[in-house]
Image 1 (cartoon, rainbow, N blue to C red):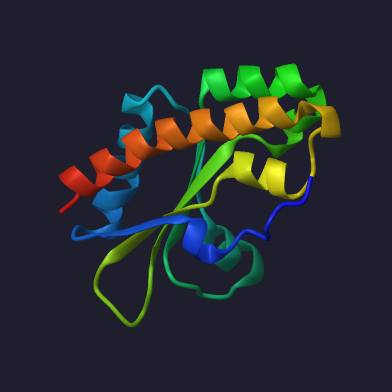
Image 2 (cartoon, rainbow, N blue to C red; image 1 turned 90 degrees about the vertical axis):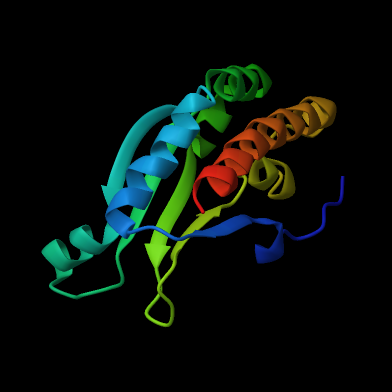
Amino acid sequence: MSQATPTAEEAMHTTLEMSFEDAVPFVQLEHELADFETVTVTRLDQMIEGMLGETVDRTALIVVCHPEIARDALAIDHALGGMLPCTTAVYERPDDDRVHVHHFSVTKAIRDLGCAPAEAGDDVEGLVALTGELMEEVWANIEARGH
């Protein structure tokens, strides 16, 4: 099965007109309202500064997992558990005053990188579709409530 190489344009991206401190728990909650469980929230900027002594723009990773996505991925191949969970980045850029929210699809990566067994093509496509539906709900709510 030949897949097109994924591009940044395929990622979900939006901006929020709120402070970074408010944006991180807001985005986390929107995931949880769609039944994603928060695995962890990590501040990359604090980690880099603490471990390397270098300053980068404020960036948080919201790491979540949805039980249906996890179940379906494991049903395809237990090794796909290594590709989970899903991560959404919340970050600032020095050139604007908005907070950015960015998410790439893990299940599209599973498909496009050929991580699943070849005979699981239909199951992987179903996993991609399910993830898309769930993340569309999250994204619609972020965009509706975040502006």
